[in-house]
Image (cartoon, rainbow, N blue to C red; front, side, top):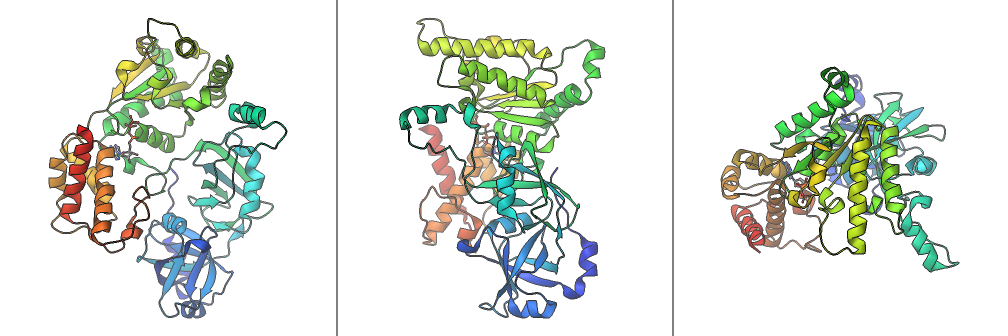
Length: 485
Ligand code: ATP
């Protein structure tokens, strides 16, 4: 949906002023500002100097600002930061083409966030202020430095309680830290453009989810769940795009779709891919969005969310781990917690029952604890569609191994097909865990200093290290041990 293409026509036009350069890492103190440190000799040849804007073409394309690199003269290199490499779809050592660019001022730029920010519209001006003169192309992911506020102050119970305790002192608003934004659309279209003070910023309410590499999540990131994807898409299409199907057939459209399956089989991943790849609005509701400190506020919040979804229709309300939100109403001792859960489950059922008023809204829930869900919620007319996701079979396991090892250097003795055969009952999450552990094993074997085992291990940290069969086998053993504990 948000993918960008290379422009080979432009490449041909500018051939005399283009250069092919090898990507190198830019030190982190200089990252986040679209700076591209380029070999001085090359810049002289193609007539560019510090401050000029370039288009960079790799597997995808992006834009950057030239800085003369006189230190690594003659190396034919371009030093860029991680986010630019992601925008290019290219890694260190790969060859990219750079071209001069005019970078016209943008009339309008439409952005979406990768994190839920309810008041993002109010923060549009602050965002623009931080991006003046930044060159971009459609599909780019951009880092916006600074601290951004997560929810509107009036609706935020945390701020309310902090204020009570803080007395007269100033209360800091909860922040989500720096933002990652996705460039959805630009005017003018399909060219390198730059932010100016006059650029109109449109913030799309849609949250865009990123994959494990920090790239926009798409169907390619999910293995072996094609039937499940097709079933969800069909239900959404019939309800949202062709409602006449239900009206004519006299059947009620589904109010809820529930994804059921063991932990780690990809239920959340599937929901996020659906969010990115379809054009419907998607509201990701977490328990903390609903559960409020004071009696009555949680019910109010849940009703508000349903109303907001109706205003944004067609809209999917996504509730992950719905069993913790709507647990089975236990008989027995009536405690405050019991009373609260009872009220919330009842309200959720009432809201679903009354959903004919909330046209074009469907709840997408997930659970790995099906038995704990209040059975009344599973009756037809509430979660009408229940989709069971099972463990990946051996061929899907192999494809999942291929997905998570595609950027790694692997020894010839490693057979992914053999690894898949011995990874019996492994979920997608387990296989991703095996690959991550194998990377750590390889790094340790080569005595690479890992600051902290919990840190993200990456292809960049590994450099040219080859992953060996034993790295994977030890990782599989470790994951199997975790199963058994
Ligand atoms: P839980 O019930 O514990 O929340 P889940 O079923 O929602 O688990 P996810 O959170 O979607 O599982 O999966 C965790 C990670 O495992 C995903 O982000 C993805 O990286 C990987 N993964 C799981 N299944 C697949 C799959 N079929 N294809 C590719 N990656 C997968």
